[in-house]
Image (cartoon, rainbow, N blue to C red):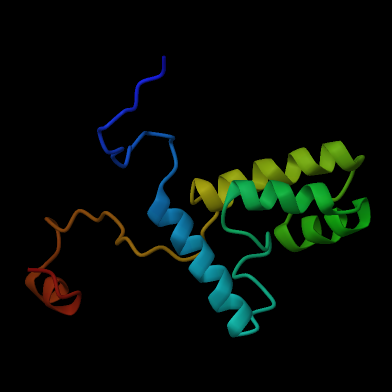
Length: 126
């Protein structure tokens, strides 16, 4: 004999490791890029996330990978697997870890204790 469950089911929340806001932001960004007809990404890798980049590499031919390697500063030698690994390594060092940046926003560390008052005034140092 089956009994009815008279309690109303509540919305359950569980942890799945996904950031829902991030997923929504990605979808909104994709729609915005389509609406604005953005054809190129900001970097030579044409991607900002490692997942997106690896999916892009899976769909590329060797010749396409070689041209991307030249644009990214990677020597385009080897077979498809070797070149794919080189590009992933360069992507991680440049995009994800923030390496190889030409311009930095941080100020250089300088010992200003030996500066004269005139030098401090010149460099706007208090």
